Amino acid sequence: MSEHADLGPELRALAQSILDRIDPAVRAAAAAAGGADGPGKCQQVWCPVCALAALVRGEQHPLLSVIAEHSVALLSVVRAMVADTDSTQRPTAPPPDEPPPSGPSRYQHIPVTVDE
Image: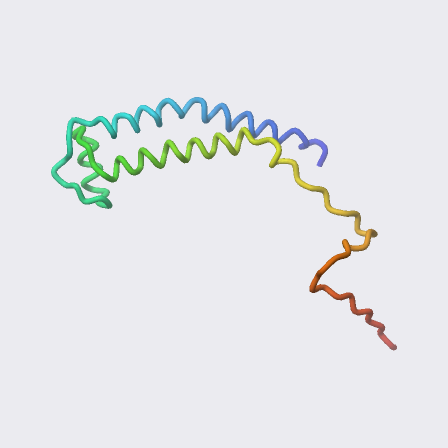
């Protein structure tokens, strides 16, 4: 297990590198979706065929706008998760020979003896 101790920081650095490379492309696509020539012929919000046709023609479509907004928001969430190093530290479990913490609990230890 110790040979993979630095895997977390390496993965975090890789994720940060990927985010840095795709962030400009996602933001440019979001800006292009919001600043298209004008509304397309079809304005049905959840029609992927019409959204694709509008994308090809350079027109604005509600689905493209929703995807653009959510893509930028998702990228921000992933970036925040990668940057958050405190949450990657897992709390250590108590050693097995320590009794469980006292306090209100529904657990009740019942001793069991087996007669042979």
